[in-house]
Length: 103
Image (cartoon, helix red, strand yellow):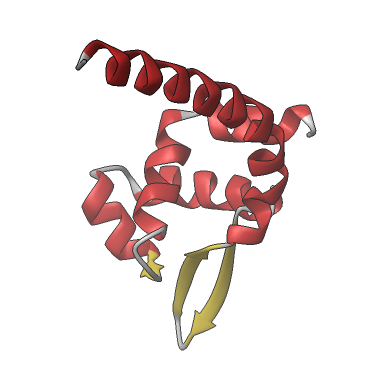
């Protein structure tokens, strides 16, 4: 995983944009309205997400429509896999402990 992907995901505004894009495609104007940010600020963050491969854009007449690029999150997902396994092991152990306490 590259440091730039971590840096991109570390920003709370970019995470909010990704959360919004997760629900489907949105125009820049719709994102401005939802996030209560200026158009230049939203456009700047979208450019960063696009350059990182986390979002994609298509042109519809004079509007730019953005969507989440799930493939861009694959590297991050792979990096998280061992941590997910660690948590799963701990949750399984807790479940076994709780099950034994019921007796």
